Image 1 (spheres, rainbow, N blue to C red):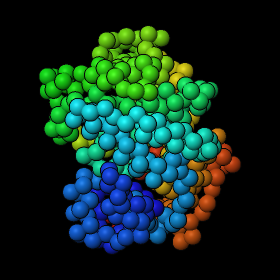
Image 2 (tube, rainbow, N blue to C red):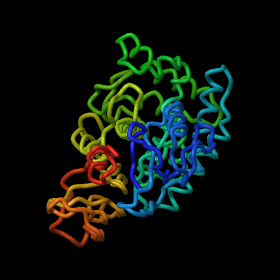
Image 3 (cartoon, rainbow, N blue to C red):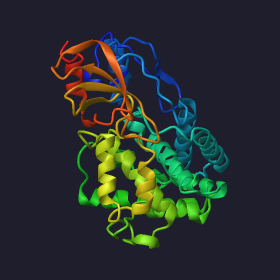
Length: 367
């Protein structure tokens, strides 16, 4: 299994993971062979990438923190809540409560599982999928920070609804494909304050959770918005969500950005900005839950070999299990060799192949 962009999708490639619409319906199911018509449909839905089966890489099993159906249902609830607010109605706080509780239960059950999968989401529904991923990442961090159940619930509500103020922003502006003008950026930045005001009026949403919407764009050194507060002036939940928000935004396709950042690059950025943009203690906890080289990544080793990551341990995320598919002379191995980098102490990952490089290695690019 490997990830390809829609631009490099070809007839005959077999889908390795279900692709959902934002309403929870399967757009294309696992095992379907791509056709020109299917590729066109994916483009119409603004699906920018998808997982495909790959004979050379072989079967790879991925442990999920939160199952697909829970994510899809939570996206649906988030979309409904924001649409209700856009139309001047109250959101259903009970549905939000149940959605957050379901995510918490699955995360607690899967404590040993690491964030290890690229999320596939429709670009025209980015805000809703993003909100769910931010909620998952924030709750994971809260669990490792030792939050009790009531605190986790408040963090989860704030994280899931952190962008609720965007329901007051025109969709044309939200999904604009070109760079924002200074005036447009100011308009979008209003979503932080407006989100706080919206959540203050909602049943079952505490002021603590509402402050997440107001403060998730504040930065530890005072360089954020809307008020430029810093350090401990920023509510702790908002400091957690700020990290999750930034990480997901960096590692996910966006309509206005040509290329997303790879997970190991995003983690390096967070390490470098801990103490300036982000709370350094929360950064330390946050990065422990993220696989720098997710399952399915094609990596270069210090030995000159190329390999695919097959399993990542939460205890040693930078030392995954790998399957070597090319030797140091550049020759494809007829029988790939399995290695566990936790035991191979002289072998290191020195780079990650991008999609084009991986395609060439697997003799698919250009066919």
